[in-house]
Amino acid sequence: MSARSTRRALASLLLAGLCASSIATAQVADPLAATGRWSANTDGSAPLPPMGWNSWNAFNSDVDEEKVLASARALVDTKLAALGYRYVVIDDGWWLKRRQPDGRMLIRTSHFPSAATGSDTSFRPLTDRLHAMGLKAGIYSDIGRNSCGQIYTPDFKNQPEGSVAEREVGLYGHVDQDIRLYFADWNFDFIKVDGCGARGLPADAPRVRSGLYRALPPLVDMQSLGGSDVAGIRALYEQVHTALRTHAAGRDYVYALCLWGAGDVRAWGKDVGNMSRTSDDIQPVWARMLTNFDTVTHRALYAHPGSWNDPDMLFVGTGDFDAAHLTEARSHFALWAMVNAPLIIGYDLRALTPKLQAIFGNAEIVALNQDAAGNQAVLAYDSDEVQILVKTLADGEKAVAVFNRTAAPAKAVMTAAQLKLNPAADVRLRDLWSKATQTFRGELLLALAPHETRIFRVSGTRRMPNGRYLSELTGRVNAAVDGVVVPEPDPTIHHSITPWIGTRGAGEHPQYGGWGGAEVDRAPYGKLMRVAGKEYDTGIGVLSNSRLEVRNAGYATFTASVGVNDSGQPGSGTTTFEVWGDGRLLARSRAMAFGDPAAPLTANVRGVRIVELVARASGAPVGARPAPAIWADAALLR
Ligand code: GLA
Image 1: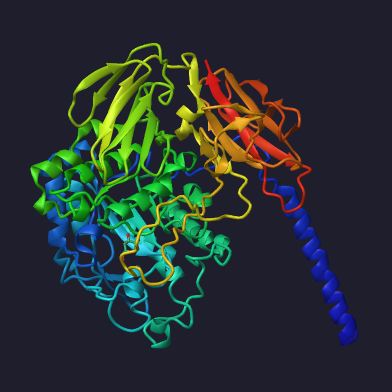
Image 2: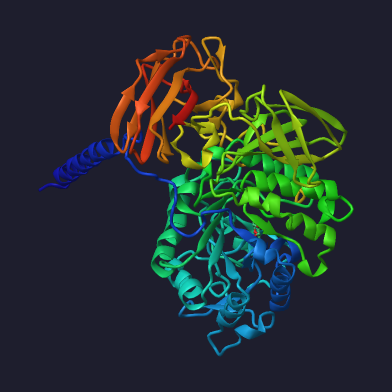
């Protein structure tokens, strides 16, 4: 065979292979096909948002055994542990080096003396002590070869030592070895996996050029979702998931992703880990707390038992949230509790005062966070100034937080309608800070001090007595496919000054690619739910070409009014709404166009475990933004 014909034969073989593989992809790749299963992560052990303490906010990398144990003892002595603060997590700074040539990680025994168990070093004595105290132990690593501290922190204490290879302390290339060591040998229960090594070491980085670290082509570009290798970074985090299944199976463990909302982790973090950071690091600064908080408030459908949104650790006790700013400290804590954030204390507990302890130890607020239903609070009222968040509890009661974001006093009217309670009946409130109770009908005027959050437990007469609105069951609804075609950062997130660069450059750009995602009680892009001029105050708004999974809990009927939201565009094709039960089609709407009045859709879901709500687009012009599909008044009835 001539060289040319060999090349031609090879080319046609390649083409045949490509065609076969693209046909195969087309066959398996209908993401809207009902699967009858819940696709969000259920591995690990996080039926409730994890609670505990982490060394980073208190000590940065200057962490040692005495500090860790003192914090652990304080958790036990103050009874915070009994309230649920069980995970004691050692963040960046524990490692000495990766031994060569066997790659075993060595601990900095000058700071963790009990780890000096011989040439191997071991955290087992420390985790044994924590376990004996009734606590759980957590460790920190990075998905790349190097850690955040190595790459970004200029005055980093306890830098790993030795040769380039010895300083490669991250998981990259060692996932199985390290996870086995941390979980099977050292007996940790929790791992936080940071992502700096997969972003900060391009070949031209100064610390690569100087020979300090090896280059790793970045998978994550913090400023460009398009420039991030989303599949690549996801695959690395999935390797850790797989290793945990192998080496920590059969016991409780928590897998915490720390990718700051970058790499489109919004869309997949919930399928891979137990908690997933939605923002860059929190700082003890009011405006920064707002930034972090804003990255989760529109994301209730991306958090469930087993996979929580993580706006980062608590900074209660420090800076704008210190003992002289208890209003701010209480707000920060109440908001984190409402959005089901993991409650991870970041304070030096040796310095805990009774007033700070009363915040962390507010059992009724902790109970909201730890409510078994796992429904993240939903924004019932939103503005740049006051926000009202409502969370439906397992027993059908509500919690509500009324939050003044501003530095001025504010007046807020809270309505029974916002709580989805009957306005003609009594609504009873219990203030979870003062413990005072009161009753109102219709609406209530509240005066808020600057930065104050009023937080109440509420009971009344439910507007939906015979079941639940889906917006009251967010912990049971998973935005499996949310229709977002081009992930974009959410522009409504508060842009704070990033403390690490100040006002140099063009300003802060939050990384969370969640704009246009599935929303509760509003249309995508935060728009009002309105179909053919008719407004709805409850339901789920999601882009067309989406599939929502709903865990049914013994309900008999699904009902909704479906249509294309008025925030869409005429001439954008049609959307057909389908209800599936355990993989079988139960109901389908006609094709709905922009301007069509919403149509009722009902399905018998008795005995069904997983209901899937599929909104399929057809006939949309090429390049058009997917039409906003509204499942108005969506509810499960007994
Ligand atoms: C990153 C993480 C922080 C902390 C530091 C440690 O910045 O987001 O939470 O773990 O790394 O270096």
